[in-house]
Length: 165
Image (tube, rainbow, N blue to C red):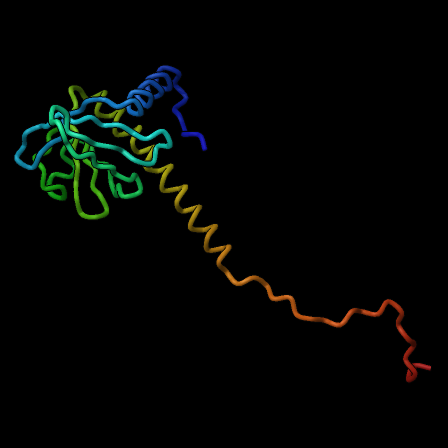
């Protein structure tokens, strides 16, 4: 299923490049609870189902695969200051997750911040739509089918009714 893209060709080109960069992986600062930004490699899988986050500069840093369907809300700037428990600034994009966790990314400028937020929103919306459709289809296939009752065949030759003569 294709992502809905803005009509403006410049924006389309910018979003396409941004998506390519995210699939390849790019280094982004991730905000820690204490307010420091930790450099992490952030990448999307090719099917745009998971965001993988891994701290850079650490030899055996763990990778965290974040399923997009677990993103409950994408907040820009300080919108999620209270909900996230993170010291957010205007340059942040914060993901509030269904498990009650939050992940915030820090950007150099507002354009990049907004591009990340809107592009990620497209991915999350698309993923959630696919999952809703999948659930709907599985419910349909699990629903009891109309039973086929054994019926006597209908006779094509109707006998005249004796009472009608």
